[in-house]
Length: 222
Image 1 (cartoon, helix red, strand yellow):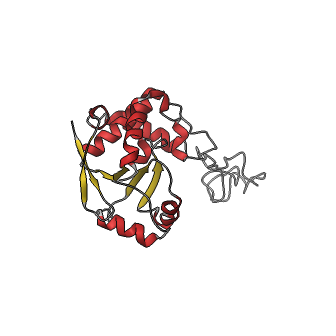
Image 2: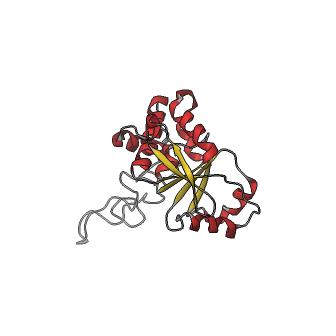
Image 3: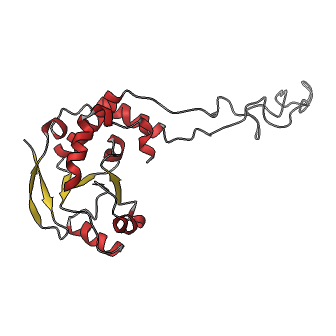
């Protein structure tokens, strides 16, 4: 059975915890991960991109010049795609990128993401996630003590401490926080390091193993 080191806020080791091999030592299905991550990312797209075709752009009702005798190339309309300001050929139009995936696929992708992080030695545990004050400086001190100041990290907690939430607001580029009951493969793969609150570990393992607990694909928007 694999193990993960539990750290205190000052970076000192507090012990080790055994991990569930069904969650953290499972075979990594990279193809499945790619499919599910693409679905999560697509479900966050608005799909409002739009261009106008030849029939939609303004103007062009009159032929620019006569067909013959000018020495110039023949043209029928200023709305032609080869004209500046003309229509766009095969341009993007509004569409829905949402993809619904079976719960079994999302659950398997979550297990693959957790196993991949463990195999890369990127899983750490923190004894507790409670801050005394909502100070970014205090949180940065913890991050540096854990050696995570140069790695984009996902911190998984059991419940959101208000001080922790406020302290991390301007560290989103480096340090993001998710509840254990909401975490999914997309959240995990977007970050290099995975830091899990010790109390949240059982919730993460249960979520990965319990098919009914796996969220909808749109959960990546949380």
